[in-house]
Image (tube, rainbow, N blue to C red; front, side):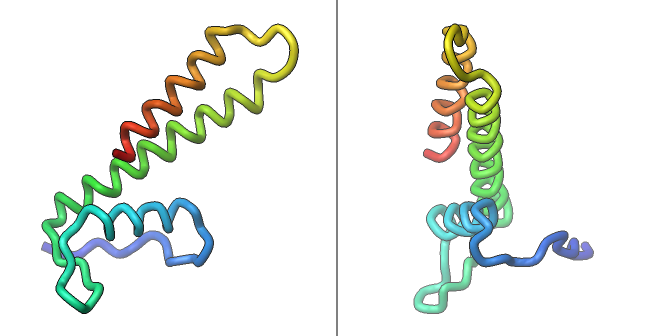
Length: 93
């Protein structure tokens, strides 16, 4: 099996990359004392997928907030943004 080549490089301060790294670090097994993640690739993929879902939900909620502002905002629109934020929190936990 050939290893896929990374499509991105690490960039300090990139919130998406840092969130993925934090999720992998928190949820995956590490080699004692070295800081190297030695977990099953499926567990790593699960941590990344959860982070990706949460980021997508947050971005969608922020887009709703940016688009629908001011007087007369529909309560269903607000409810939709709140649901997306709740889904993001569930994906992170």
